[in-house]
Length: 203
Ligand SMILES: Cc1cc2nc3c(=O)[nH]c(=O)nc-3n(C[C@H](O)[C@H](O)[C@H](O)COP(=O)(O)O)c2cc1C
Image 1 (tube, rainbow, N blue to C red):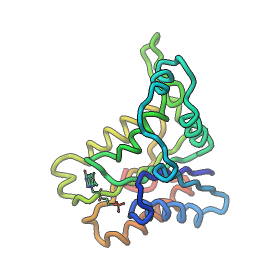
Image 2 (cartoon, rainbow, N blue to C red; image 1 turned 90 degrees about the horizontal axis):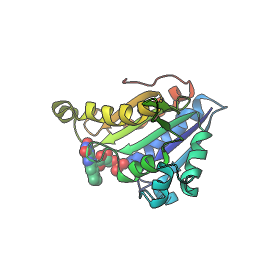
Image 3 (cartoon, rainbow, N blue to C red; image 1 turned 90 degrees about the vertical axis):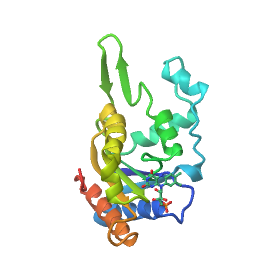
Image 4 (cartoon, rainbow, N blue to C red; image 1 turned 120 degrees about the vertical axis):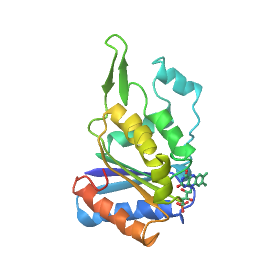
């Protein structure tokens, strides 16, 4: 089983990166056969800007640009995808949004069957785990409905749309008991459950 962990944060000393490393540690501790790649979008210099090349791909006038095709190829090699990111404005950072915008293309992630009026979901084989970390407290999340807004937009709006099952979805908060060390334990546990191919909490 191969897992691709995608990290969207420029600072390798951040909690986000520490969480990503702990997820990888958990996977490898739980399974000798499991392989893991951490894709550090910032370090790799992924360009999140939507381009004319992306428009041509979207309208099926041209194949994917080489950078997008490379990202799709590495997703094709993965059985599981883990997104690790800080909560920015009750969503994820622009770098990760641009990665989704550009890589999860029509034709690869889904097919808009205009004739039948149906969306063909093409990522049913890809198991998804979401690990966000935010500065807010749980009360704020609950009071304003931010958690359910994130679930609707990200879990459902992106991954369910493409047919990729979201097996776990966590928002780790600064107000949680034992922050930040507890989140590193949680991250390792998420990794162990990913290796066991099981849903890993709160969903
Ligand atoms: C631009 C920006 C937007 C943010 N928006 C939110 C937010 O909407 N909700 C939240 O809980 N925290 C928000 N935060 C706080 C970050 O989620 C928090 O700093 C992060 O969890 C820290 O992790 P790190 O060490 O990996 O950067 C925001 C931070 C920044 C810089």
